[in-house]
Length: 301
Image 1: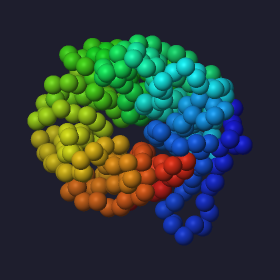
Image 2: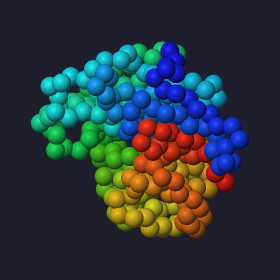
Image 3: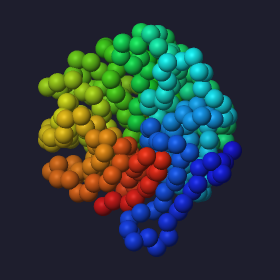
């Protein structure tokens, strides 16, 4: 189901910025963004007529697909939103929350051909407790997620690739190239293969809050430091306090601070460019950036 009346697709042609490939205007402020291949998924904030909603932008077909029917939010809930989105192979995965003292977390999935969301997990938890369901960066047909210390990888066709139990609560995940990186409390990152077998285990100097996989390596965030490891080679690059590692691919990593999206080279940490925006995702040489209601895709070197 395609809703071009809800979300206007505006592909640029001959724009002054030669690197800009296209943009879309969402129905409300974008609150989450992820991309893989030629598609991106984004969450849009609730409006007076509709609740928080997830959409998939298929860049090659110039279509925006709404996942789930339009419906208003429960007016009783004192807090709600979408916290984590992922997409690969036409399948989206996202986690929503609602509630006051007891927060109800739900994991959903849907595809661009079967847009009705299917609930995969439901976890009620005290509002002061850490987020129990974590959606990771997806890629290569795998969508990883975790419930506390239990890790699962969903294939793009909807089947489960594997289930693995981490030794501690999971804080971040990422998939790329048939590997899944799992960051856990205790400053540990375990890399698994597509069957859930342990490939490697890395220990870090402090807790890891975000992780991304690159060719023959891994990028993690520790506080206000990004650390890149390729085998025995390791480098640390500082970012501003409050900055968040959004993604990494090829020779670049992207992090955001709520106002700007920063692109850095992984070889030396030098910032190559920056754009106004709150969210970003990398898919090869394509950089997706969300600013307010607008999502823009650009090519980067």
